[in-house]
Image (cartoon, rainbow, N blue to C red; front, top):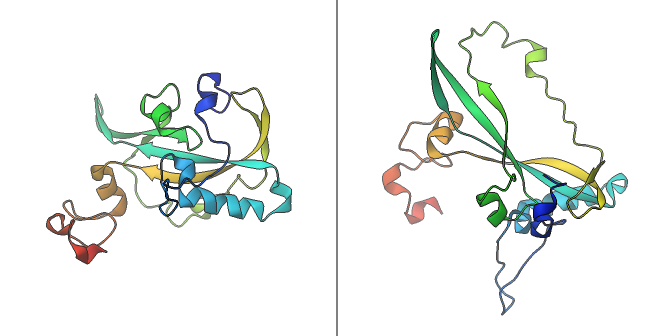
Length: 183
């Protein structure tokens, strides 16, 4: 995605802030204008070994689907990936800015491996800059970071282990989602 020349002009190479014409209100437009992207850039800038690197936020998403096969129902989660550097208008029309990177299957297993340390191990591999070619032909040192996980409401219910009809972020029921009590 970084090397795709078709949208090299539709990509942000660093986080930014954009303000209204009177200068008092921050305007959020693309992913790199968000506070989170700026916070991550500040963390990266704090390490002298990462100076000169650009931040590439990895955006993941999934959507459950059920496939009928001869052995019974199997549930799969197509896992999608995009990067936050690409402008939202490009991502919406895809232009190869969203890719299916895998299908997560939900096997029917027992909990026999739940206490195994290898089952729980996660080793982050995004601590050192790597050189990548961008669509404008230039090579940049990049630091990738896991950004948001995008899911529809049904997926959020499953991931947050909540009862359907309740908010995935707070304890409000669907009847109370527009009240001031949530603020």
